[in-house]
Length: 326
Image 1 (cartoon, rainbow, N blue to C red):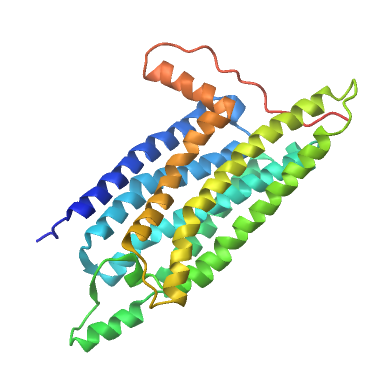
Image 2: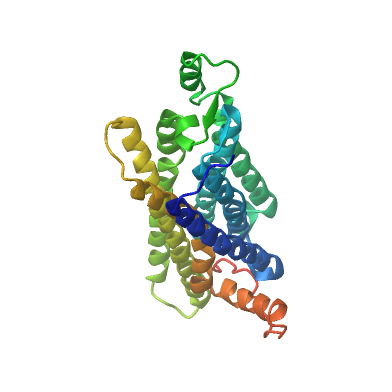
């Protein structure tokens, strides 16, 4: 008999479904925009597509699995473990995509004249593949043995039961908090976030340094180039800020669980932290639409061409910005 759903669970499911209904179409639109607009084909936007793919998967896969876990079905231990791991993979993929974007923007302002020879489409594709492979390794580590199977088996045997343990499927019942804090947070979340903050600070410093140079008759192109870089860097730094704001509360709660087991964590705080992590996947397309003109124009064109049946003006497909001239 399936477990009954309380009014609180029904409200939780409703909010999760709403987040998914915003996240999936929004991020599909981001991918679509890059596909149809030639001006969105440089390395940065390829990394943004990788981030959007992870966000689509959050809405289409992670949120349904989170709803399933919230209902609390009884499953075998390893079945529950496989349900819990996708969110770890996709979170790590998002972090590495954000790191790749930050490094790419740094190279654009640090070595603008050599950027196109250093960041080639092939190297960008290799970087994206590497990010996803590493994300799978980090996210599937619990399946390789760093989990709570031993603890659950001892409790299972103490009850006189045999075979693989059957449990009420909950994230904290299968995923070790030592893994979540020491490995996931302290190694694969916090250091990349801090590194990205440092990279963006350096990016803003380099751009400001160039923009503050005295404008000469021949410096129009560099001024225009660095002006565009500043606008894009601000938008991408906002994406990073929203990601940190969305994910740090849950990781802080995990630290409290590990270091202060007796501390009480209000259920509402846990649910808010979970909503923030899932809601982050819906935020990025909104930021792109309001902050990056090429995305905004392309979104409107897609809307008019495919949903209003009224052709929009041609997309301003500026060629990707060249570096400043000598």
